[in-house]
Length: 80
View 1: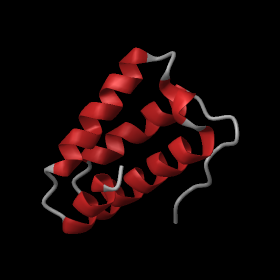
View 2: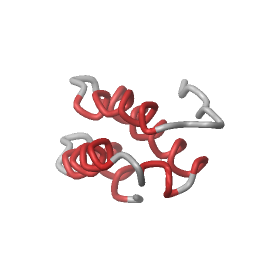
View 3: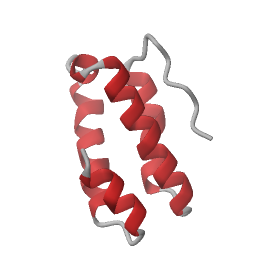
View 4: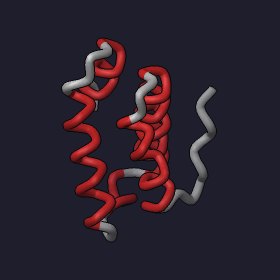
């Protein structure tokens, strides 16, 4: 089950989710994407404005998951 998004999320919350995007288990990759999506929707697009490093890693992670061998993961990331 996905953990609820903190109401005052920071770029550190996003950074903590990024390793999940490269996990060996496709369920963890899927849930990591789901949690990331929830953080971004809940906190708005300005969440990563002040942290270019985490922003770049987030984009890299999302681009990497577009190549995922699991169709559900690919479908979720393509909705971004």
